[in-house]
Image 1 (spheres, rainbow, N blue to C red):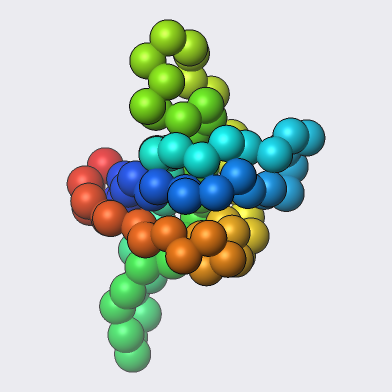
Image 2 (image 1 turned 180 degrees about the horizontal axis):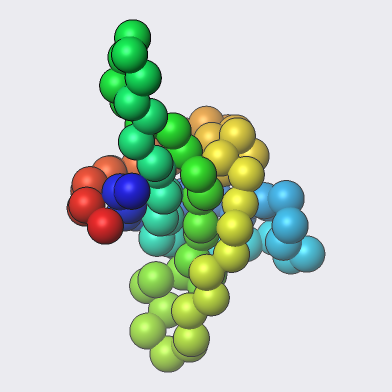
Length: 92
């Protein structure tokens, strides 16, 4: 298993499935857990889960909460906002 940690900055308010509120602009942490796929024909990684940290990691006064999100829903929100993800791979 490996975990990829990234951060992303949203420039505009945005919605994600599973959240009742519109989330404010800011920098958020993302964690992706992947498992290795090793077959006779190929080797690679398969996404197991994606988690999103709220509130914004810029808000130092509040507590963090990690929630599972759909990778496709997160990607659509990033594309709509024009945001860019900065991955930092860490082996777990």
